[in-house]
Length: 442
Image (cartoon, rainbow, N blue to C red):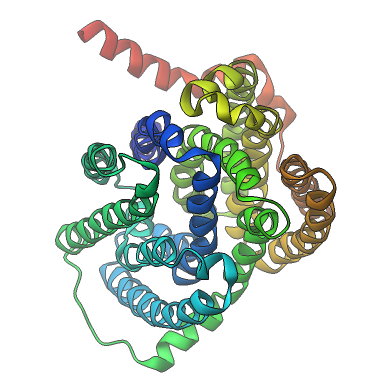
């Protein structure tokens, strides 16, 4: 794939991620003032709990299925096989998730007290079954789905402002969110089937279980990652008030918007691009990483400084003065995009493409266990601030650990020569020229 095509995919994924987070946050200045920190905390807690089911249904296919197809995207037979296997696995995992959710709904107090919010949040899992983002990533074909997402999220923005008019309407927010996600997912499913002429065939239980077993390491790696991300809010809610959950969630949600614009488009577009390079050979893949890493570091570092300086003003503008206690949390989290960008390159881009899944799992699992123990202690001592500190420290330790493991395996993920200004400029030059030509046309 050319640099031009890679740039277009990064921009397209940027549109997808901005619409996933930024457009809904147009509603936040209104919604947060109507609901207040406590009801905002209720919604955020339910969403965090449902993220476990989303993770189970997705089963890491965004990485594993993408990896399979991206190395030979022209192979129609392989594409059909992977598509059918992934969809069948997701259906089975959705049924299992539904059974587990029903048990939790009546046995877990935070969910039992807010059954409507919990149910409305859970139905978003239907969208996870149908979404084909992994396939679009593998085929490096994203512009149309970006605009589909934009239209759908515009619909969400207008709908939520109409539906949520008073404090008691907080229960409808997760329903609107879930329905929109389902619409986007089903639309992407239909478009993918037509675009790639996908053919359906029956997938037996044996094939499903074989695939689940084959990809278990990646899934459990992602599961343990959730222990120090998603579980932060769950643990906070167990020991502190809904209001503290609201303060932390407000800062985290704003950071998710920043990450959606800064790191996620880069990660999603680069994974199949770098995967294809590793498909040509280990040395080719590493050279590609060496060239791209300095640009990622520069971009995320500048963005982090900008967020640190403007964060307090933006947070007050979005949430109002009631959420002022969220400011210290957001300032701590401004370091997250740079750290995660590095760990993404070391872990997802290099380790995953070199099939170092077990080493990746060991690092994330051990750090996640330590993180949970530390989080329980810190939440009880300093509340939601402790949750933020715990997340930051965990990400730093994971990134350093990945670098050490790569070096011990004879892999150098960093080429210092590529950090020279001239080398960085050579990587940015095609993008700069493309933008300047567009500006001249206007």
